[in-house]
Image (cartoon, rainbow, N blue to C red; front, side):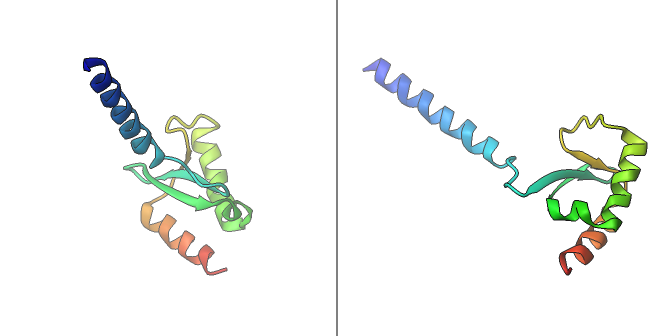
Length: 93
């Protein structure tokens, strides 16, 4: 009976681990970017990448960080408020 309880505990802890990692998944058609001094994470549509105003941010990111992004997602070198303003305008297109 001790083995059965141990296997139930293992399954429960595995489910908790799975649930906690699912919060970091990015849906298809989106990408994660990190913005601002606090590196706040945003998930944005990939369609933003085609917009000239967003491409300017990508160019700035390339100049500042190159292709090394330690956070795992794209790091955007701008203020959070500036980024929110830009994405708000892009979402209205």
